[in-house]
Length: 166
Image 1 (cartoon, rainbow, N blue to C red):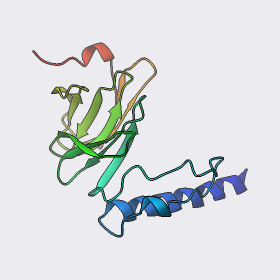
Image 2 (image 1 turned 90 degrees about the vertical axis):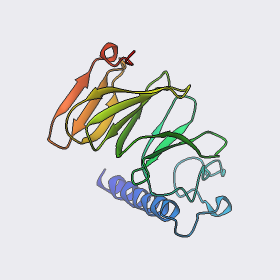
Image 3 (image 1 turned 30 degrees about the vertical axis):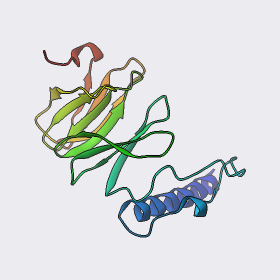
Image 4 (image 1 turned 60 degrees about the vertical axis):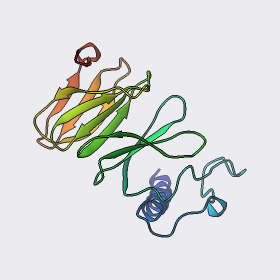
């Protein structure tokens, strides 16, 4: 068991190093140079879906294969659809965490303690304010939003309470 852990750690380290290199404006990671380093997809099915993205942090994937990431400095939320052409999805000051539900509503936590919901049609609204930096977001199987803060709190926000204001 311990040997498997070490191998996975190496593969994770390689992936993180490649992601940092591609995302910091350094040398791009061209799609034709992407190699499968483990797993069962040695047939070349793995590929780079975006490169040269500015200062990306955080990553979530919705049920349709759309990836969402953020540029914390620019306050830009990027969406990378399955065809791999990144697009600006939303602008939020100080994004720190992302989560996406089964309806493709993207939740964005911020350094200021706000949580915004962005729907697939582009509507965005603040749905909660916790008063301190949001350090993590996740959804449970019932669609409730779990929020971790930099003050050591873990909140569970019931789905029905996360409504857009009128």
